[in-house]
Image (cartoon, rainbow, N blue to C red; front, side, top):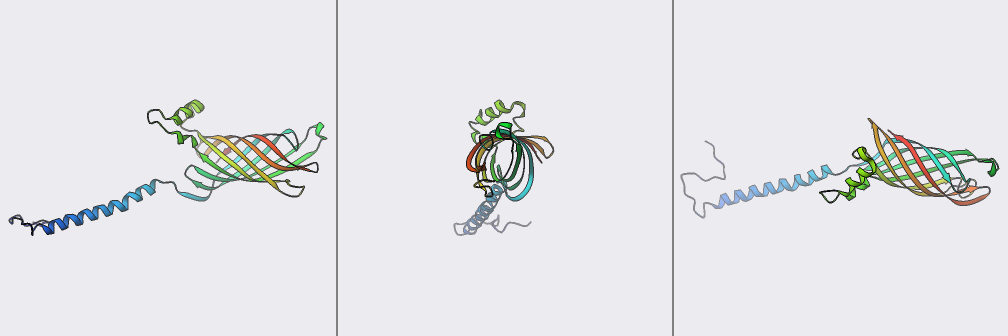
Amino acid sequence: MAQSLCSPEPSLRLTPNDSAPQRRCLKAHAIIVATVLWVLVPMTVLAQEALLEWFPIRPINLDAVLRQQTFAPTDREFTIQAGITALRYGDIEVRGLYRYFSEHSREEDHGFETNQHAILVNPRWNNFIDILNFPKSAPISRTIRHILFGPLEDRAVPYVGLLAGTNYPGNGPHSPGYFIGGQLGVRFPIAFGVSLDIAVEHNRFQVHFHDKTKEAQQWVLTTGVRF
């Protein structure tokens, strides 16, 4: 019968000198096991980490915007918005947006039409509520989800985001101006690969109106789909 090279002959009694090879063999086994664990454990941890994705494009969003603006003009407007995903890393994503609106003003504003374009970068933090996932017995995040979303708490994806980019016309009739803002929203999956996205924004941007350049502030409610 074959025997391990690390095992002494059963018929022989080990002496202190004879046990030295066995100790060396056990030490070699321990080094091999430690090496394997040192290699495999980091690989397992890395496999569980989020992957960085460049230009996944999807999900694409299409939104209709109800808008109230304090200047240029003071009125409610209808806006169309479209965007793509430029970067995704776990719950962090960066989106690129294009926003266009055109409106005929009210009679008290002398009946004119305004056209404005905005190109924006929109970083978002999805499921930000989950940072409050403590204590284990009754996580605060779970309580907030239950209060806000009820039976949809496990499907809702709440998020916070920033908006930064340019608005045209902005610093002059033929020059762009700055655009900055923030948003708070939630996304609900409604079918395979399709979600309903609702968000509230507050923005500040530079706009040229009636030969004047001024900063306007606006509250925006966006409702759209992502697919």
